[in-house]
Length: 273
Image 1 (cartoon, one colour):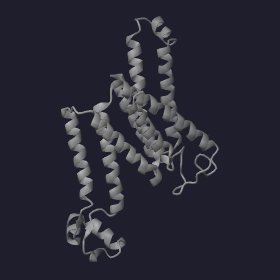
Image 2 (tube, one colour):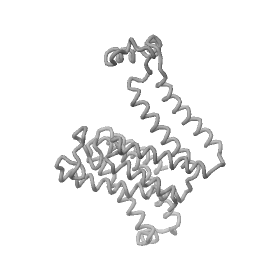
Image 3 (cartoon, one colour):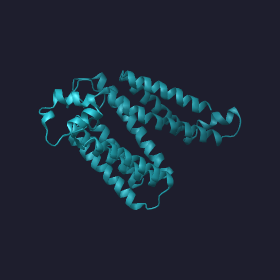
Image 4 (tube, one colour):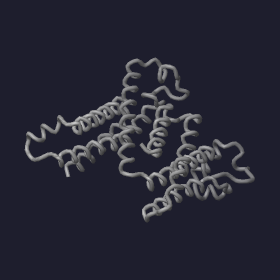
């Protein structure tokens, strides 16, 4: 396992298991780690392709767009650009109309600053990994994410059955009372699974397709393939996909379940082709 894969899985595990990284002590180290790993990867790779350049430009424009919302503007300019922002600030921001230095277009500049830092850190990691990841690295990351998804589902199901109002049996959520697994919000768990499931499902379909290509024609040969080590791992991945889908369903998140149904329809269409 390369250091890039280990770093990716450690960061993913930290952001997931640390209560979904909703607290500053969890998400600040996560962002610093992502930025550090991204920079280290970029410094090791000097060659760039046209796709890398386009991705860099797109992410730079995204970061710049977020940053523009932090530029102080006069009250008249804010009213002209975004009347609703002006109305909200007049109602909830103390002393807003009389600010000498103006106000940012963002209603909550502190939250926008945090989003800017998060976007910058994750963009650096995306750029670095897009250039440096090999096929074997990608496969190992998918395996790790699949294992983590299974662990999360088991934790979520066990916690739901023995719920005592505390995550992991000792942590009372500071905000909200609707957790699932290590996440303080069941919708966050469903969203994480919606991102992880396509990776696991794609890996499963890829293994099935590759396994079928290596099997000789005939029903007997296909049945015998199920006794091979390759087939055992493929079946295990398929079981993991079903378990992760079950965990998502148990959250009873309407948006998560609708997203799962949409993903199954789209994936089924591609598999049928």
